[in-house]
Image (cartoon, rainbow, N blue to C red; front, side, top):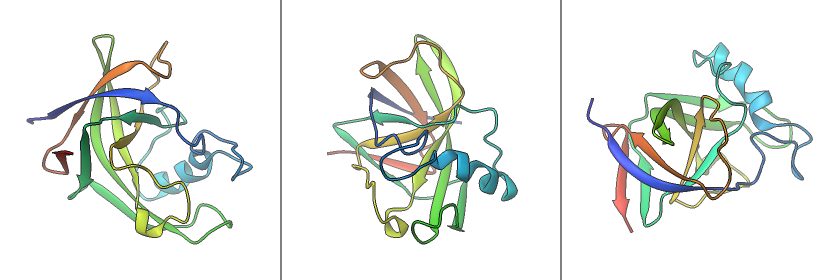
Length: 149
């Protein structure tokens, strides 16, 4: 497969996925992963949080994701959400880590909206990675369109 290479910086997100946070008394992924698994996406071997990768000056649009899960009821604090996923690879210190672009659909979210230059990725654990580190991400151009803003 031909990949699109993006360069980015790891930044701190809302800290909701790994939680708990000020908005949720639990980590969102703790609640979501069993539901995702029951619908065919097993993330049990991946890190229990997301990498928030700032890809400016680029933005992205998930156009034909490999997988979309509709009406995921993972909390009683707001209505169900839709989530899309596209395989990716994170490259850090010359090592490739398998992952998924994690895309909670903005039209079903009530809070924690992301900038279109922020790529959220669920990946295998990456030793020694910290906020501010530079990373490369390979995304599938058949599923994710990248634009320069």
